[in-house]
Image (cartoon, rainbow, N blue to C red):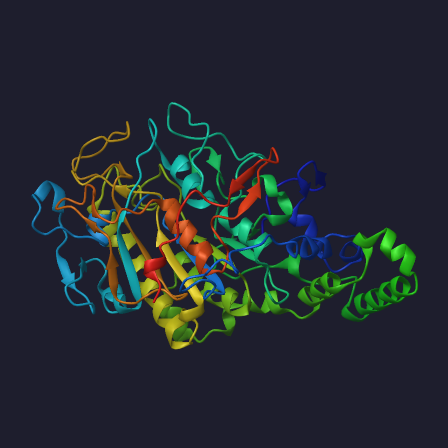
Length: 482
């Protein structure tokens, strides 16, 4: 079942997205989904008239693969074969399609697709005090550092005063050109211990801009009842209601001006089309894909989620956030890239085979379909893992072959949307402990995604106290664009 967390009803910070999507009956004309489209149309100005540089606005959509837990950069993206054994680890490097660029032997399929992307090997930031997953996730997704961090490094639960997650900002500033869901998150919320979804909601923008949360396993049959007509209201009946209300409003111009929020305008048309066209429902139907394509992505939650992400952006969704389908602080044999207790076994037997197959398939598929040039793909975690094995860097205990949290140097992969191909940006030192060249803050990566979509990262928005703030505290990496 499609789960949209949260109580129903109108709250002080806006109407919930669940209400907006309870369509198919009178609720459609009760100012829910149409209001959503109307709100999304009120965008703020961008840098269109400020001497835009290359790559600005080339991307139409973004697929964010959020690798929760912090994947080990040394064991996946940035091997150091000449480092001491307690740093380089167990895996050997392999050659890739990019001359001189090595990957870990855990990523043989991606090695054949590396000519389609850029590895940023100098991601880095220095946290204030103790740090853990929720604080790092919040910064990565909102573009702002958290203002309250507990002694454990965790944050408070999500609040209406939080800075909005990037997908929510994009939903407001650049709504889809077609009647399609603007922002989809799947297959589960980001979570650390009992803090669920921090940095993953619309915050002070209001719940209308929350993601459409498909908290299901895409490798199993998907139920999307919220996007279907109610059984007691057929298509013909809904069409009749639409035409009747349109006729009434067109004959009452003065009243329409007085209560413009109830006018049947282009936003009603979009809402009407979203329900009746079946565009969103069709995008969620993975059964339309050939069996060979589904196998190429991998018959896993993450693999089928990436395939679904491709279908959604193909249909017009602006941002799809595919979270690694596990939680931090769990068992690394089955959960996130949080390899304190064991690093090499889980990476070799579980995480990397799934990531390798899925990420390589997504890049290859998008490129073959001609979608990669207009779709920005970002694969990144909230931080990396400690270069030295078995040490504590965040107050956590670690096994002799475990790696702890490490925000000081890690790797992100970025591709498509005007990004150059087959290059490495930045460089880590001999032990992958710190950037040697061109450090990149995670907020710079987020600013680059905004830039690719044609949104000025420096534009001012109003926070929950109506104070002007830049959209993100970061600078776009303009040199990444070809």
